[in-house]
Length: 61
Image 1 (tube, rainbow, N blue to C red):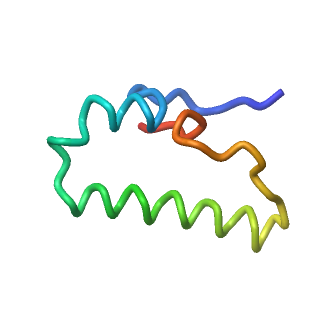
Image 2: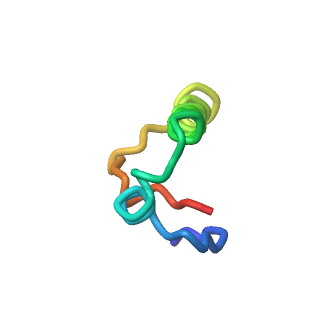
């Protein structure tokens, strides 16, 4: 079982579906950077591989 912090915007898929047109490119790039930083951390520091990576599994706050 995993316990996650509550994220009021739901998952990335839903968030982008309803907000993509309104987001500035700076925000889109920031989201991409945060995702890639998280993946880099779990891969290089924790030596883990996320085997079910998709926008529905990325929570947005």
